[in-house]
Length: 288
DNA sequence: CCTTTCACCTGTATGC
DNA sequence: TGCATACAGGTGAAAG
Image (cartoon, rainbow, N blue to C red; front, side):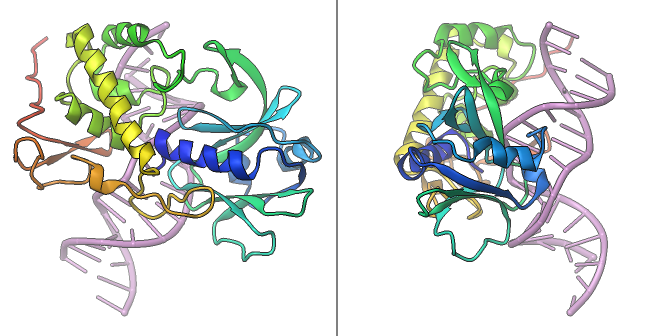
């Protein structure tokens, strides 16, 4: 379940193994993997053949490889997507969706995705949020590690929302890169229950939550990303693993490391939320 | 316009 | 054993 730290690990792998190389051919093995490339598979391949891959970039959970001329290969790993760099003659993976070969005859880039929630496409670049980004993600907010992320603006917009704080953290148009795992971890660090109405948070509390978000994702990145079901694999096929450092996620009934109370699991948006019932008390419902 | 819900997808674990 | 069900959950379209 790649979130920002895992995607950043992949970006670094692409930067090392793919940037600077010339695309020779691209093959689409599953149409759903390029469903957001409207012109179709043939155009997808033709669009990148002969072009040189630029430095790998990322915003939140999206990755892209500039092709020059304001084009880029944009990728999202979804739930189970992997970008692998492997020898061209290596056995095709069971869920191989797209393969991109290079003119130098070296290792090829493969997009492998069991659940095909992820996707790849070639797109034009545009300008959004003070930065050149691929057109399809112009609506995605800056992530908290971007140089120009606006902390005060984030606090202001979050507090103006009529929703709960975990929903806001997961809203990629407000802040990008945060998924279910790190949202729970950040909320635990900030001692907030996910159901807390955003409008009741003070500015300093939002700043604390933002700091906690950065801390937990920095820690994950320093250890190479998190994985739970072995589906997440970095660009060279090496699995990232970080779950020992998680305080609450997936730890139902285990003692909270701060107060010893058993961690509880609650259903949320057809997902799971984990929290400490003592450190993060659920806000009382206020009658309307 | 803002917020919430649901479809999309498949492998693994669990229950009867 | 076999079948049904729950679960993992990011995204964006659709609904409210």
